[in-house]
Length: 469
Ligand code: PLP
Image 1: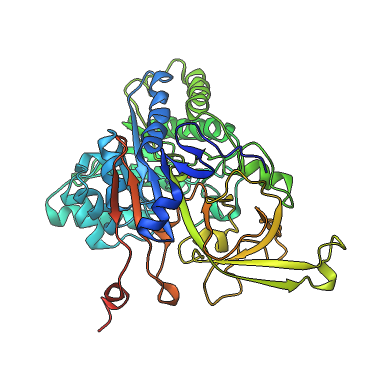
Image 2 (image 1 turned 120 degrees about the vertical axis):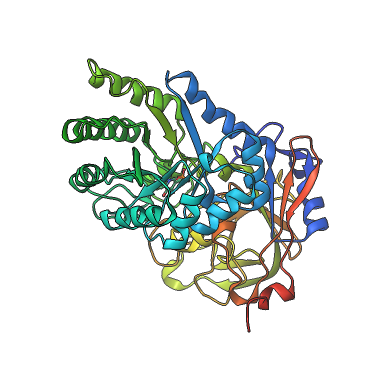
């Protein structure tokens, strides 16, 4: 691969070393140790600015709610809040963290398909913007809880409109085969039952098509489908809703402008998807306005989006050190090139304990040498993490063809060399575990003014047993 990962003033090469926001990556690795997550606040805020451009293409209020599940380290939540946007949470724990990070109740949406009463209580007491309801049963639980608290809960119904996205099957969320949301007829029933409830304020409808959607058309499909629901709800119940929430899912280009060799075209296309969210929403909004001609349904509507990946993924680099190497003969059946019958293995300190998607979804994170980013990355290696699992590898072992067979790095990589996994901010640390007694890694935020802030320290021995009795 060429150096298409470079981003001016963010990911560069200086004196032959990878530089992140003008700071040498190897220096950071030395100071904080590895594995280490390094986050660029400048990139974070620029991603938010890019999404705020959606305001210029729709003449209605826009609420952007950062999907906290993507990464919810407190320093990140605070930085997101400082950038002026809102937040989407998926549990009582994330809701509590959002409040702690300074978000007001009216800045919070709460998703999730198995909410507990204590979580609903927290949401209702804090008068959050919307509890996104997943079933008729859950709605009855919300009504009961709100009545007990003497409150009125704001709710929005999550619909499953059967919209397919060409993303990874585990990231699809708007199909009837997925576990989320309510079918449209259940939703109409809910509106009929609760429209006059003193304890439920029906404020909106919601859907989320999926994550890393490669095709912007799904946002038009989603918006049109929500609009059809708005019309039917009006017809059946007389209600005019205040908001529609079209979810998150804007893609991140994980591989620059060059395809990864050894994986199928459609996966390369999914991983390199790039479109401007503002363009997708402009087209979706135009299509909806066409079908809304003659109605007042959209006159006072607020539009919500809840992106996670497109805000945080490309802000973060995971630095990892090669801790061990070995060479092995390639098994007879796998020899592709008679001249390379030996596999060189690199064993790093970053495994699926901190990059779970690499195992569960066989997700591709581009890997470069932070010590020698300028040298040709033309030597194939089998790269693997430190866990006591054969599946803890940076390549595909199950013939799913989602990851390349080898990773390309400079010649002669030795223990001690620092490598960088790029675009690691989303669904990584937030899914991490202490599996194998491994410490959760530290996170360094490079502030917009260039200052370094350690926003999460590395776990200690004590953290490994904190909750054990
Ligand atoms: N909203 C909901 C309901 C989700 O399930 C997700 C993630 O799957 C998101 C928002 C964020 O999606 P993304 O990180 O792809 O923007």
